[in-house]
Amino acid sequence: MSNDPANENGSPLAEDGVCPTCGKPATARNRPFCSKRCADVDLQRWLSGVYVIPAVETDAGPDDPSTEDDRAV
Image (cartoon, rainbow, N blue to C red):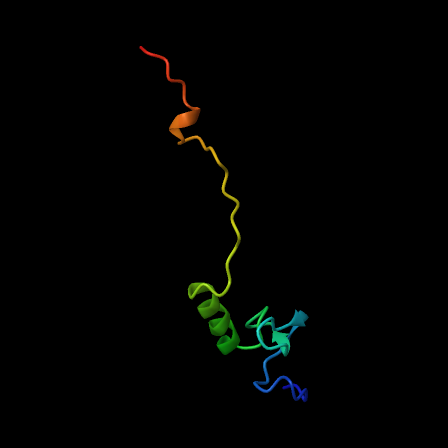
């Protein structure tokens, strides 16, 4: 068990980094988070739309009828 006050749950620390949710040291069991709670908070942020990955939309794509040949058969 660790004597680190930031590691309240006594889990072994991960080799790298800190928890992206609260900033405490990450544990090996919950890496990159410090606890299951922080992992669940992060998941809820993704599911509720707080976190998003921006997408770039193009004007014309392969399904756009304006880019297809309009030759008569």
